[in-house]
Image 1 (cartoon, rainbow, N blue to C red):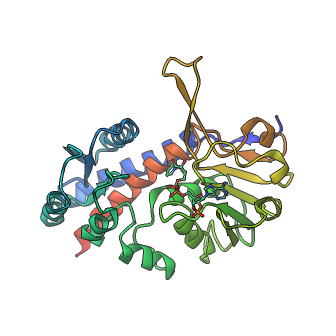
Image 2 (cartoon, protein in one colour):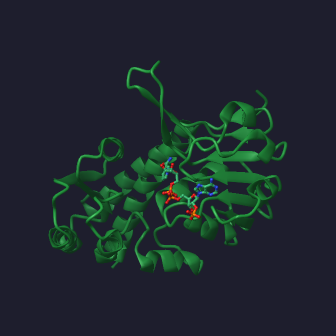
Length: 295
Ligand SMILES: NC(=O)c1ccc[n+]([C@@H]2O[C@H](COP(=O)([O-])OP(=O)(O)OC[C@H]3O[C@@H](n4cnc5c(N)ncnc54)[C@H](OP(=O)(O)O)[C@@H]3O)[C@@H](O)[C@H]2O)c1
């Protein structure tokens, strides 16, 4: 293998330490700690596992955390009422509604109900708009994590040709906005690919930094990667694997072994972008608490 493996856990741990210091300072000056409340609907095992990870991370850095759990039968009105209650609670600095929601619920309407000053997922239109305008308040944690990882790896993003595969509101779109801005870890030339892109390989082969976020296992093959490129794999898919106790393993969008022979650096799945997502959520919660204290 030629590529250097980018260990997300190492970078995430550095961010956790920074947040822990920030939380301690916040407590010393305000007498309270930042608070995150997660709203978890239904019994999707992946969502439950993500929420556990978030609770544990908050506890480690001293952020107060609570999870409101409700059955998948909850109505839209009941869910919006919960969000509105959290909007009014001064102890709650960050509100995170774990996605995806059960099909009968209107995800956009729920996100729009969150107070934008508490929208630590960065999905409210006000925060998405501010990010697009180059005045970010809260950007979604995964794109922030990808950017922070690139900065920590000292990847020169200034003028770099970046290709992002995936244009979701959670990953591809906000990451595009972040990397296009002038500033550290940005000022890149960004191309975004999606299912309508005619020849994805022709685009990805020009990338100095290739970021894959499709959610399908293995669409990025070695022939699609420029020799020496940095490859960031955001995708997480469950693939059946009878050799594993759980019966499945997690895999990314990138054909890891082959691409690692071509790239100069690559993130693994798991252990790459995933840990960064949680750590940047903590950064957003601390930021929300600081903004609330300043008002
Ligand atoms: N590690 C983490 O912390 C973390 C956090 C968030 C998400 N994720 C993972 O990242 C992946 C993407 O998440 P998401 O929420 O962005 O998913 P999403 O909303 O389903 O979006 C997927 C995007 O990929 C595009 N796409 C799908 N297949 C493609 C293909 N073969 N070629 C080109 N483009 C393709 C889609 O194009 P169209 O728009 O044309 O349909 C869409 O824009 C998932 O595996 C998710 O689990 C990981």
